[in-house]
Image 1 (cartoon, one colour):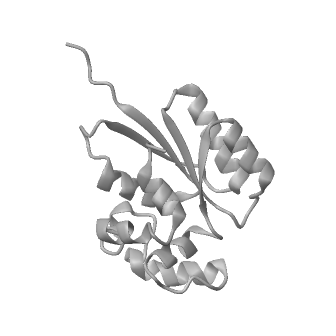
Image 2 (spheres, one colour; image 1 turned 180 degrees about the vertical axis):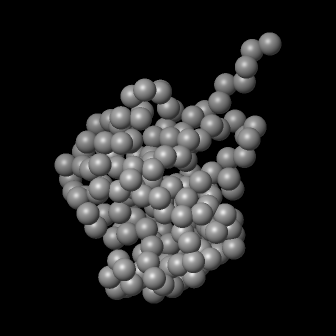
Length: 164
């Protein structure tokens, strides 16, 4: 008997917080046996160009059906990085200007201030630790994410993967 063919998706998060969130999304929407194999990795920061390069590097060793990178636009983002991603088939999921701002807007909370202020205000929504995927369950459950799709294009793109 032939093995069932799975569609494959590589999700690259800029840092550990993005990786934890992407792992949470994977758990919600891509359970075992659903026909979609999702791998989530962390680029360990270092700006948008590094995140895109990490996605490209990992997609060279395995032929994923879809490759996407969740990254902040506050560091190292520009037309050159965008063109490099497009040339290599990497879908860029932009957090403008950062992940915490995007997620704050998703739950209709203020998204202004410095990155440090945004992170501080964001922590209570993830039980004080955004590095743990299960900490996203209470605030960022399915109903919240589905509602947030209407106001955050990046979340809509993410939740439509791999069917772009």
